[in-house]
Length: 191
Image (tube, rainbow, N blue to C red; front, side):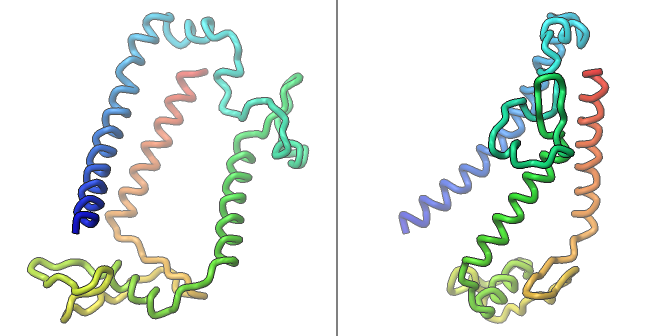
């Protein structure tokens, strides 16, 4: 009982503190920007203070390692004596490496029994109703609760992808618009 209480308390405390610290990090990271820009004379002064143009580059640093040496030449950006992977190819390489690691891991991992997987998905997609009885064991549905029918976008070859809710799609689009605006603002301010 003490372990369950301790874990539950620690997880809920970590969630709350991470949430608060995330908000504070975002807020406090923008507070010094006007003062710093005023102190150095704006973006132009910042460029003069930091004379090295590589400090404003969004491309990987110029060290040559195995990863960089193994790439085809058309993926690289050569500038004088510096060689770097251009940013789009850098992102593609990291994403491909992550997908490959996931595929290799899944090939060497023993699959769970289908009944366990189905039971997990049934619990995950069934909303908790007000006044619903507590389940007898963790990660199961309470007695008398029927699992919700899945609203799936993809259900093939053992892969289930849930159809996203309209509010989730709107939130996704709004967040990506905000990201694009931040990247655009950074681009405009550094030119």
